[in-house]
Image (cartoon, rainbow, N blue to C red; front, side, top):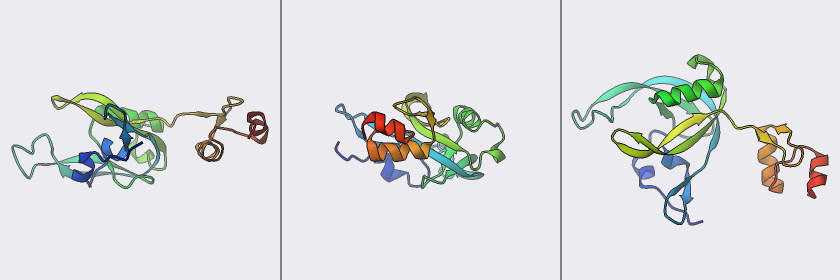
Length: 166
């Protein structure tokens, strides 16, 4: 796959955007996005540029909730009700003070209608359950990642490795 850079990645260096999860493009030059399993490091309210009113006022600002992740360099602005609900669902609590330390899946939803246009939007969902390819047992993210890297298959035990022929 050819390495391509979305133009937005060069323009927005402050906050997380879908372009930060882009890993390339398909044959029709549509972006291909990765999902990231991320641990919430901190949640803060901060003043950010108000993109909805920037044309009216070049200095327009508003307070937004920002979520910082251990695994990602930039914070994610949480201003869509969809993402508040996604975070509450993924962390199993509606209380933002309890989100720190919880693991969530950050991904891109393609074709979201917002601000009078269609765009690709960041979303949050629960960490998907990882299953052993041989026995179907639920396995941890760490075992899943290590097994996929080493064997190209999700395997939970020596017996499953043996059954898979690796």
